[in-house]
Length: 443
Image (tube, rainbow, N blue to C red; front, side, top):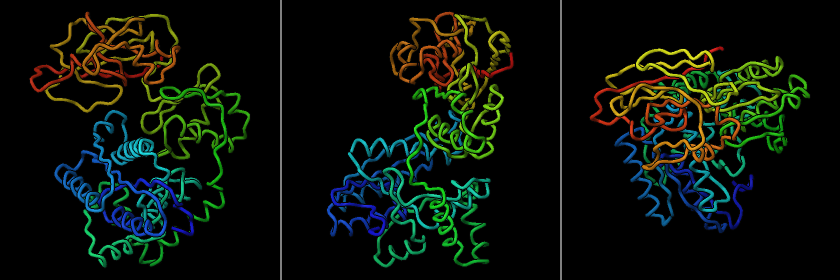
């Protein structure tokens, strides 16, 4: 830890603390180091809401651990399953997205100068191998860094076996996550099935992958600052001019697009070189659309490359509205949209483009239209201006008329990807459940 200058006197270090062996060992080591270097420690624990009783047990363990050592602890809960359905992510990606967003938020509130993560040599080896199997470029082979932004990984050169030996020798308790043995997760299959076979060929295979990651990091200079590209937009919609992108060679353009997608999406998780090449293809043609993991829509329009997770019919248009029959299938060719509804007996999985609502609390006939000044929808227990909701999403003015609204004769029922009127939310006593899906169509 000292050789990498990960912690300096006066630091405030927030530890990502699951209660598992890695985070427990990391915290114990930091507590020992604090006797030699003056710095502050706090813990952050996230209950993902996925493992029922076991998750509650882990949370109580973390609270007790922090209390016994006199450490402040921040505990957050999140419905990762709901985010997974809403954004069409894998469970692993949804959990990772929530975890990093919350830990950054808590780090900022507490004033942390560093966030310590318990990744080990085994985690690094698994990450590099997973990226290799998916088909990665050099950055995927570089794996995780010892230091990255505010994040530090003090255990990255220590094996999982060494961590367990450290804890057992000192009689330090920890909890175990049973999902780490679930072979339905890609990382677990690497750990439980593939890695033992590779270690038969090379008993030091994990160390070899660690050296590979370091060599690649040196080659591509991961420590350098990201280029200052002319992005426009914050949340909602991100764009960059085609002229800027086309000023680069084809290979350099992929490098630029990588940063564009990271800016628009928040991470490059599950984004492969093939995805970047698909974007480069529509850039070269100056037209087209492609979809990335997490349902990020990327398209060309009026001299710009756009990216947005929001549901946006790709059409500039004045006020419009069309009647739709629900249940039933409706094709709105004028705006390139299909709207389909079915009556269901149980709730169906939803994403940003589909929804279920209480049919008996609506007032048919239905219609689909775009935004009007003064529109309101019931959200968070009160009527809110849709304009203010859009502003909260960072959606610029010229895009507001591009989002379709599902309405009945009295109110806005649903704004895809943004809001469902709380008066039509399905309850336990709902008798008829209407499932509605909107999809883009070629005009």
